[in-house]
Length: 260
Image (cartoon, rainbow, N blue to C red; front, side, top):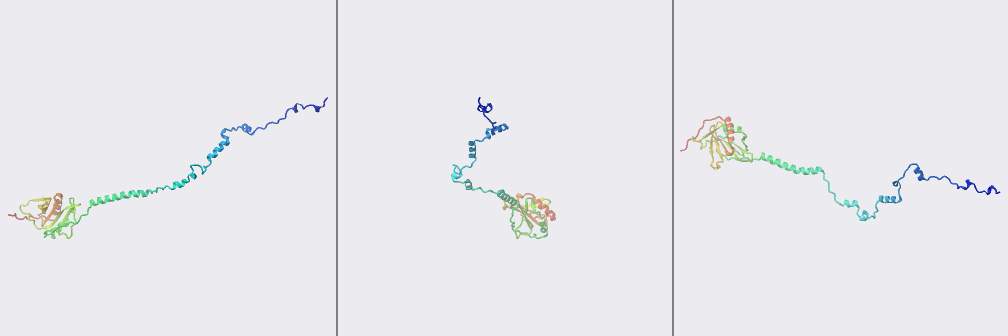
């Protein structure tokens, strides 16, 4: 009989001894419930592409500022910038011409309404009673306006006992003379015209072309002549009649004899 040492190992010793396998980290992660997708895994190729895209271009890359030799800041600085104008300056530049035009128009309107008239020069005629009581009472009472005609200044030395009126733009005046002698044309055959209680006698001047005439007041203590253009109308004679009737009392008329 052989000894027990000569016996081959028993079944327990004949089976290879294996230790329990330790699960890998990937398996542990999966077992823990974490699922990794393809997007979470970055491959070396993808990482290289991303780093290349995010990296700044090399100065030697075609089309760069270094290749062309022109800096972008230099290129824009070479172009002249348009100066900016303040809104207040623009408004002033627009307003000044407008204000100038308005001022010119205002001056033109005011000048048209109040034109400057030269003093009126009157020639002298015989007026023996110009400084008498009748003329002294009448002249201060005469109106400043006769219709559209306004009182005109007389060039000095002005004849005594006279007054004149003109239109705003000048032209033929209305002239009153007080203290005259009886007119030669005023005879017993002369036709008279009564205007507001005052007797008038008209004399036409052939040299005037019948565009003006002279009217005489013949029923006061002195003779008063009013020379005026026909276009003045009846208003001047009416206004002067009203003033004369208040300032001077009426007198009987005294015409000259009828010539042979």
